[in-house]
Image (cartoon, rainbow, N blue to C red; front, top):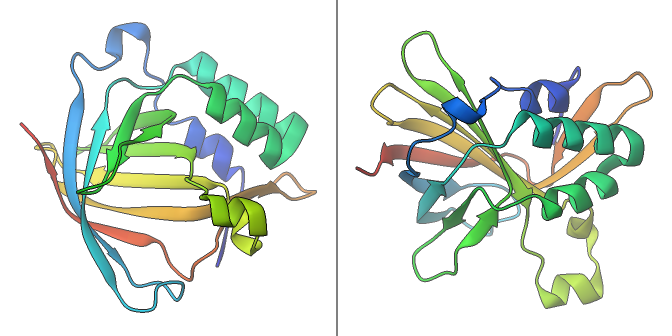
Length: 189
């Protein structure tokens, strides 16, 4: 499934610029219920998910990612993303915490906010050795739509490829037929 958005990555990465003064005063923690109904799952998979955001990515980090992507494409973007400091983590019950390397947010008119998270995805030993088609989808992108109380919905694209067409359009391609739904998002107090 291919999502094509004119300069999508630039717009996605350019979300409301947090300055040093507006970075998070304390970590933000959310819990959600993930539902994966994609064709890559043999049946609907469900699981609780915990997301913690310790800090927001800076304008400098955002600009660096955009510059590297324009010059070196997806492989350069992946390498640069992995070098960024950890901004938070995501995990499911019984699993290790998985580092997030990019976090931005945009205030909404109703007092809520849109949160964008990006990281490299876990690639296991079998996948690294056998190199199936999924190896070309190295990013995980998460979008949370939260109300003023920190409740909402979201979606996660677990296997994502990011490319740029000749006309400058940036394409986000999800390996599965649809993103994982994040339901019943709640801010942990």
